[in-house]
Image (cartoon, rainbow, N blue to C red; front, side):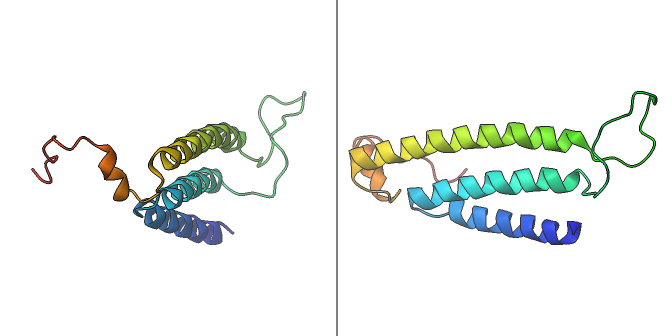
Length: 125
């Protein structure tokens, strides 16, 4: 199961990088959303997938007596879901506002919003 999830995480990362390199804002936003899901799935897979008992230690014991599920990746994922959703919502509003002002979602066409008199930025070192 972990190998299948590792391959799925690799596919998610590949698709998200491909979408992030696009010149359309909506594709870039979808790439950010998929990247967030890929990172969450990576953290979940790194936390050892087991079909064991929940991480509850009985009162009589100081330490668990067998293999239990790891609660830390689950807590990290819950936090990451909230952060990635709020980040995606902010980027969605920002992209929609840029579309309203510029009437395009093509990043090459958005360059006309920059000042005309300014010299071009350096393209290399």
